Length: 404
Image (spheres, rainbow, N blue to C red):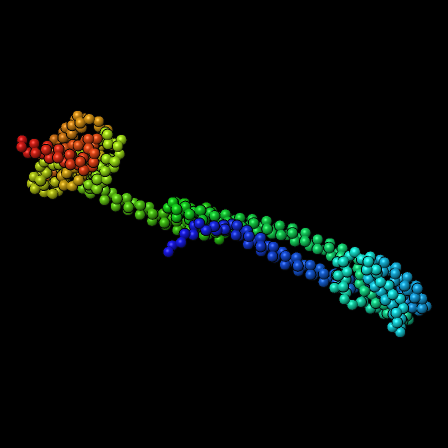
């Protein structure tokens, strides 16, 4: 069972290509964005780690005097001063006996930077330890828990910059791919238009225009070469068909339209009410053609038939159409006649065309008359009646001549 797929909606190649390009760009740019964000966070972790270690080293020098003089109040003040600057979340100072000497931590209720807290915990899961030295000997240790107030700001800024760059790059990439895709779609549309025209309208003279893309240009040239061959083949086929049609509808000896063409023409005439009202049919039959044929041979008879056809065509000009029905039987369809009297006058004038002797092309001449019978198209309701009347009238004329 054949299925009709023409009613099924299909996305166009142009729309499909754009969807694919957009999806590809979005996936690619998203992957790049994630990769850059990960690289940025890793870089940030390394930077913050070094910064916290540097802070610890600096604070160890500041706390050295407090440990030497066992001044915990001064140590707490130092931790509080630096802690309020947002350098760390908590700081603990241990003495040489590993006992807490000083401690400071930020108030969680003052924290409004949730992202910074989460990032700090992820970047620095354990405190950074830094020894406190005096004259080359350790006298204590400082432990710092990260809380960089600039972390969240830096991350937001980094993400914003990366996102903006990715969006800009995506827009540029989409513009470039759309431009390239438009070139591809235009080239394919050019080819498909030609293919559709050739298939639908059999227009083999159509050609693919020159393309901007090298591969499509070569394809178009090859396709045009194929169309050249197909057009040449079509022209030969049309010429052969025209020749076959002419052979089928024309008498090979005289060149007149034959019986098949006559039947088609007279049938169409009887169907055309307007043309029927001013048309008539003549049947012509040679009176002594058999004598010429038997006396001088078939070549001489053919010469007579050819000359009869020539005189009929000359007489009818472009107004009346002549036919050879077979042997020495001919027909003529009259157009533009409006009365029986006019038709009889034409019949008499046509008979005069055959009074002149016929050249047999063998050094001899011969005379041959033709009996002409007519029928008026507007007086006959059917094709058969028209043919029968013309044939009957033609034989009446022939019988009268034979009695003379």
